[in-house]
Image 1 (tube, rainbow, N blue to C red):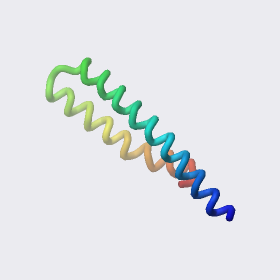
Image 2 (image 1 turned 30 degrees about the vertical axis):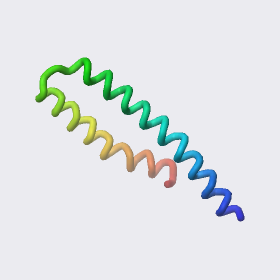
Image 3 (image 1 turned 60 degrees about the horizontal axis):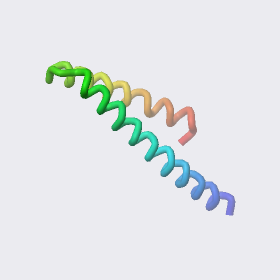
Image 4 (image 1 turned 120 degrees about the horizontal axis):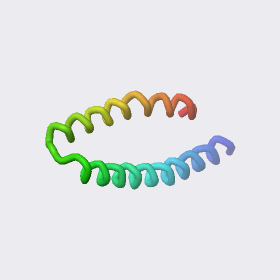
Length: 66
């Protein structure tokens, strides 16, 4: 029973945090898009943000114990 309640709690937290993170990512992306004008600069910023996400997401997941 405890495992079932834990799964429900994890699903609820994942749904709430997931939508919040998605909205924050879109807001930040829209803000950055208005500040950067050249295609090359957008590519560089996108690659840097992608690399940062690639390395930081597993660290956060490891700290949360997921």
